[in-house]
Image 1 (tube, one colour):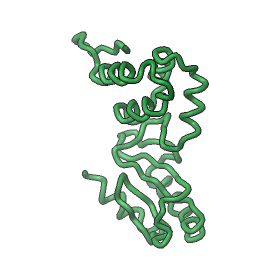
Image 2 (cartoon, rainbow, N blue to C red):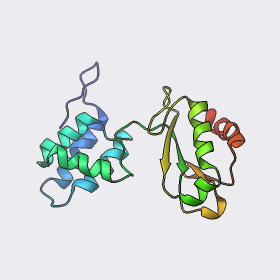
Image 3 (cartoon, rainbow, N blue to C red):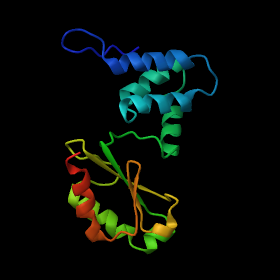
Length: 164
């Protein structure tokens, strides 16, 4: 188990959780994806040092782990913000202007797709379809759906989450 310790010498709470997750699945065939899901729940993303530890403890090559993590879009190698903004870039949304909405979010937040603001409040991602084509263009902020958007709506959306 990872021995990340704080200044007083106690073991980091996330390291304890990581150890329990690995112990739960150790020796279980096909456990990589559930382990990655649970670890991402703990850390909010999949840090490189944690992937190395998973590789060692589960005896799975780091190449295989990266193959899984980069193939499935639900996994992230980068930290996510408290508010995860996901812009739908599916056909219906794109045709109705989601590219311009994405550009406006990038400009206002000062980050690119896959990045997180320095304060950790917002992260920005793009996806292929949210499944709300009738509301195109659509974004999600965490579990909140915002539809029929235009770029001028971006300021109000950010303001809504700014002080939460």
